[in-house]
Image (cartoon, rainbow, N blue to C red; front, side, top):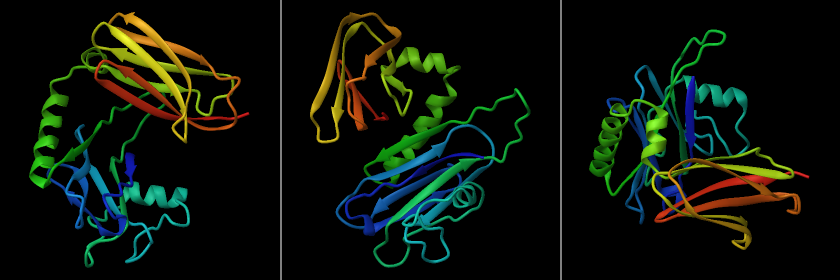
Length: 235
């Protein structure tokens, strides 16, 4: 199985409900309180889909995450169905796992699984966004086509890092790029500006040998695009 675990806290976390749209292969969460947005994840690739809605406190027969998330519990949420959580009263503290599979992957073989992370103003809006994501995905022939269409912070590695952090990103048009590292208090520790960079895939290496052990945020800014990724320095 291949899947995604999500724990959104919309407004007051104890007022959340998690539900499932089997037709769209989409799991989603909404709040019964002040927050009106809906958020969810939709499977884009064909094949079987599974959704496990989690009561985070482990009530009503659900796995719980307050005391950790074991390998057995992770596999259970990937492979067994639980279509709703937080359904009592005004809701609860919920999360979910949505997955594709099961697959049989032979040695040296591979599979492709794709999901869309979604948000909408209400359920109708979320459904429309989900349908648009599927239409867009079906029109794309390869990952390289996605990369050439959008400015994107792809990844940072290694994570944890020790002396050097490599940043991979894609530019859809010629622009300046600002790469910054922040500590968790929001203080900018390091920044590098790259002027007038051409479209395409790029790589930049930060010297982080002087950073203390701990967690940091890497931020990329290019035009109207801002992307972030969290990483850890291990000494």
